[in-house]
Image (cartoon, rainbow, N blue to C red; front, side):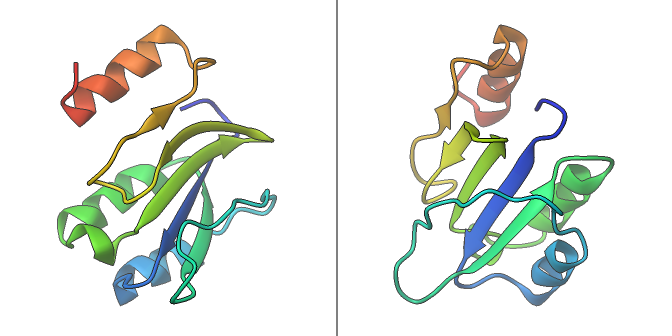
Length: 114
């Protein structure tokens, strides 16, 4: 993902260690993201995609069921949504046309739709 991208995660059953990790890595500048879950009120986190943040989150996700990590996710940069997955892991993934072809190809490979 491009520099300055932020990962928005939303969940109603997030595992305590996932919440603690995300609490410790909150983005300083966030944009409003329309939540995907109306009720119950979800936990919402904005994490910058810098350093090892994504790699560590991926390690945590390998130890948990999908709902324990998030229900919905969005990657954005500024006002631009780069990637969006409601019902993460069980539905479609929207990928922006503005991402370089190499990034789109890598995402498709990772998601098994290449």
